[in-house]
Length: 342
Image 1 (cartoon, one colour):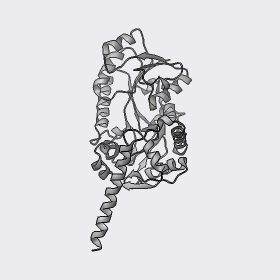
Image 2 (cartoon, helix red, strand yellow; image 1 turned 60 degrees about the vertical axis):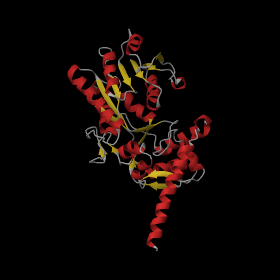
Image 3 (cartoon, one colour; image 1 turned 180 degrees about the horizontal axis):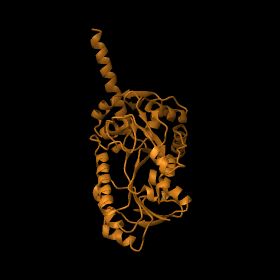
Image 4 (cartoon, helix red, strand yellow; image 1 turned 135 degrees about the horizontal axis):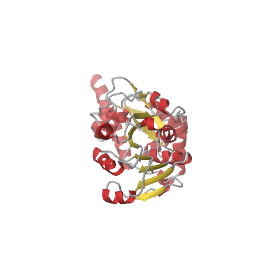
């Protein structure tokens, strides 16, 4: 069986590539070749930027047919229109990586199934993913384009520590603050529920859909069954570091007012309690079960960060942001209590 991954070296896709290769798939990657350290052993690489020159990509693909094509880096409908042109008649299954953030915000029910409505007025990224899904399903119904849609939730690997509030340079500064006993920003009161899925677990479910004709025309999410509050998430990270996390709770609305870039990722995603019903993926892939709890996942991430100096990327801007938010909220508390004691 032959699969083409558009991308193939990211957090989700590299885990899938490893597992698919171990299962005997012939793996081809179409990407720019800038992350060679994450190319799975034995994969064949077609070097090209799929978002630049479609005619050049068509030449690269000439003579190739695939059992499965997966696009990990499509974010807007125009990119999928290109994919349909490139792969119609050249693959038995096309899998689009959407996002669980596309599910209704705010939710009417906290338990999310694949039939939960798609609507996210708070995050353009999610609305674009919804539009991509709508385009593909229209193509499936109109022409039989053999699409399968997969909606990952918050998926991480050993190189990516999943935290909610961080800067543009990743999560290391959060770890640095924990190790230095500095307060760590936690949105809301930290009690909203969240689901974190290790990419190795995600790959188990995903590879069970690859080449599965019953999955064509269907949508799936693939997540862990473990639900943790954000307080528990940060405590698991602290346990992995051997430190007690000093959690500083800040209203999500206030964080977004301080930096509007958090509006999508918090109000449109992580500030909402979400619990996923994985009945459907387990029905299609009966042996799927997520086995890496976040206590173990956090230990793996922390081990990688502490053992890899290149991953310890300082973010002084985010550190300053944390201090300013804390100072502003503390000042507001002080002013309030001063006003009622006069």
